[in-house]
Image 1 (tube, one colour):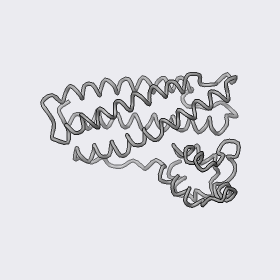
Image 2 (cartoon, helix red, strand yellow):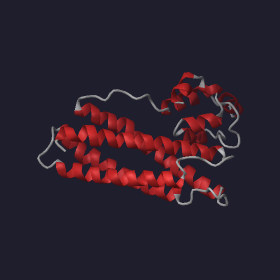
Image 3 (cartoon, one colour):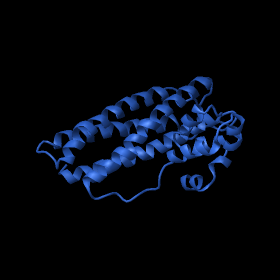
Length: 223
C-alpha cells in the first residue's frame, strides 16, 4: 500500500484513502480543515480548491509522513542509534497522540455500537506516557553511554530497557484484543478505519523497533 500511494499523485487520491493509507495523515488533514470522514470521497485537489488551499503543498507534507521502505541496518552503533531516534522515536511521538485523539472520537461517536473499542483511548494514553518515558531514558542515559563506547555497568540500563520492551509487547497484545486484530466492523466510518490502520502500522513499527534494539543493538554491548 505504501509504495502504491507514494507512486501516485496524492492530489488525485480521495481524502479517505489518504487518511487510511498514511499514518499521521489525519492530523495534517484536520489542520487544513479537510474532512476525511464524511467528505472522504472527495479528491485532495478538489477539497483543497474549495478552501483556497494549494493541494501540492499539502500532498508534499503528506508524502513526507508516508512510511519508508525497509532499509539495510547500519553496522556502526552510532549510525544505528541515529536510525532508531530519527525513524522510530520521532514517528512514535508523532503518531501515538493522533491515535489517542482518533480513539477518543470513535469511542464517543460510536458509543452505542456493539464493536466500540471501549477503553482503547485510555490504553493508548498509557502507552504514550510509557513510551515517552522509555525513549527519554534511552536518549538521555543509555544511548549517550553507548556512543562513548560502553560502560562497565551498561548491563543494568539495558536490562531495564528489555524489561520495559516486554511491557510494550503486553500493550500491543491488548490493542489487538480490543480491536479484533485491527479489523473495523462492516460499515465503519473512515475515522474508525483510519484509526485501526494506524494502530496496525504502529504495532509493526514498534515490534521492529524493539527487535532492532533487543537483537541487534544491545548484543553489541555484551547484553
